[in-house]
Length: 114
Length: 114
Image 1 (cartoon, rainbow over the protein chains, first blue to last red):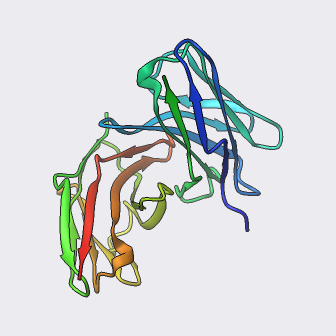
Image 2: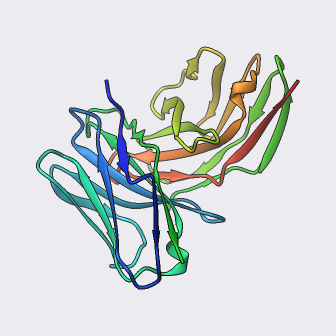
């Protein structure tokens, strides 16, 4: 069974640009979660999508947005990039609500903002 | 708001020995899940063990076991017969069924020596 996949592996952007990160969940999983892992700030919850809708959002500005497609894959968009957006972005999936809470993570996308 | 605290930034253990990583959490919820995730240098988050709050019995997965003290809001991880491959960052995480977002601790870096 294929795990959660993310693309690209690395992404380099400059301040003010937009970044698009992609995530494909495990087959059969309907929920996708996005987390930011910034140096010194730990892992922070960004967004949760389930069945195509945004279900919950972390304490991040509106520059961070996303969507979930009919095939349950997801996109995270970060507009007007700032230096502090440099981080590892992790995507996770689960079969909410029957997954018993377990979320499976992808390998992450390393975003560097210059 | 829920918080997760890992008071040990770094721990070291000799191969084949036992080590315990500490985690405390704060919540007013009665129904929740607790997890330990491992993040090796490859950055892929791997689920080590999970515990449902309603279960009194401590979870065990091979060499990994937890000591779940619900009243004290404590959730420690014991690694027995430590192996070189256990070296990684270990994150304690909390999840409620309603919010469905994982709240992570700051992590404990485990070093395994010969």
